[in-house]
Image 1 (spheres, rainbow, N blue to C red):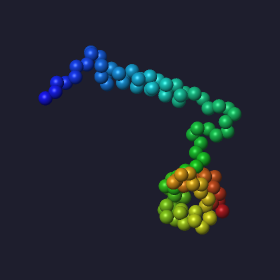
Image 2 (tube, helix red, strand yellow):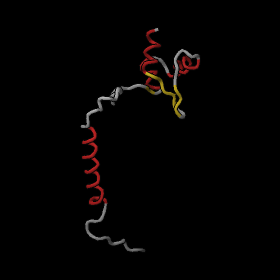
Image 3 (cartoon, rainbow, N blue to C red):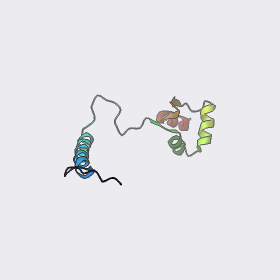
Image 4 (cartoon, one colour):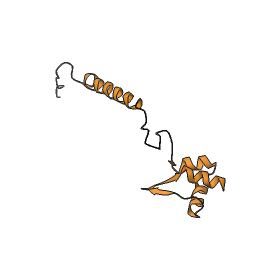
Length: 97
């Protein structure tokens, strides 16, 4: 049977990680308080595209119906990797017509 490895005092996750987490938290809080740039027309809280589930929920239809509308060309979507993204403006235009 092997003996446990002895480590110097103060070594371990309690002392090593906690200061790093506090520094990360302070950095994150500073990032949140940074105001958006004036020359950027898109604000951080403004959503411009949503995924399939959210788009279906916004239109109050099933995902299957949304896929059918997309396949028929009634709603346009952009494929990013394996995910379909729907423009919020495109969804609003579909509802208005």
